[in-house]
Amino acid sequence: MKIHRKSQFKNPGKDLAWFETWVKKLETHNERHYEPIQIKTSLGKTHIWGLNTSIDKLETLVIFPGARTSALFWDFDRGLDHMGKKFRIFLIETNGLPNLSEGNTPDIKTNAYGEWALEVLQALKLTQVHIAGASFGGLICMKLCLIAPHIIKTAFLLNPGCLQPFSLHPKNLYYNLLPIVNPSRKNVIKFLEQAVFCKPQHTLSETAETLLVEYEVFALKRYMDKTQKPYYMGSELEQIRVNTYLLEGSRDILFPPALSIKNAHAKICTLKQVFLFENVGHGIETYPKAIHTIGQTILSQ
Image 1 (cartoon, rainbow, N blue to C red):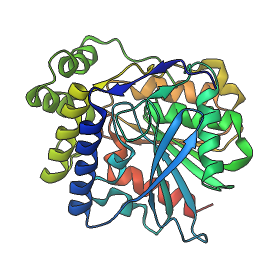
Image 2 (image 1 turned 135 degrees about the horizontal axis):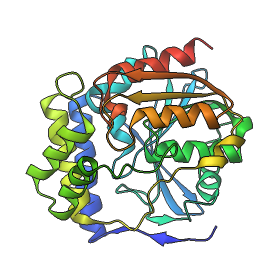
Image 3 (image 1 turned 90 degrees about the vertical axis):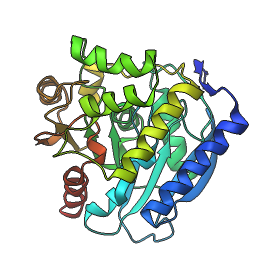
């Protein structure tokens, strides 16, 4: 696989140690342990966090995170418990994002990320799985569906970045650029409050929010991000043959839901259902009812 770009931490030894300490704090808050799994892929080392991985009889869910996030965001305040039943879960730390995986990335407009995701499933010896992706992770899910539809039972897209271009609305640009230009704690909190959450409906506990702010400040200051951003896949989506569910937050300003829903209906012939959650921001993977919807949808099949 051709490496198109490479992102990296400024001081890998020191910064990766910080990240590992951050994970331990999350484990303490959640009172559970995430099984660390490392595999070798065409993009170098890929890191995965596992829950209930040894229980083969459980339904398997593979999760891909959004840009400038960790897959562990999905379990702030034990969010994955809201699925309603025990699942075998693999949280994939996508290469090129601020995490323990190497920063090598392919050209995002090819199917190479899908090929990489298939390598991950094969290394984990997974043959039939459900997949879910938020924002950037939604694009990874669609690339995987193009490469290996026979392996995927169901795909869940949460405020995905592949159903329309990134919004150029002045409000969205302002709040997204603010912490990038000046990555202070104050500006990160402002971005989270205006773009990611929608308080009081969509929020986290004080401890989880503190962990999130710490991570975002760290990622903005310590990670040299060269990774391409998601794009509207357009006609590529017409090739999807996997049962797909779309979960949208009504207050997502990065990818406003109306256009994403319209394009999903127009382009994805196997779109099964759209769920719209009122007063939910872009960080829908932290919203309990969205996670519950994924769990109940899987269990109803």
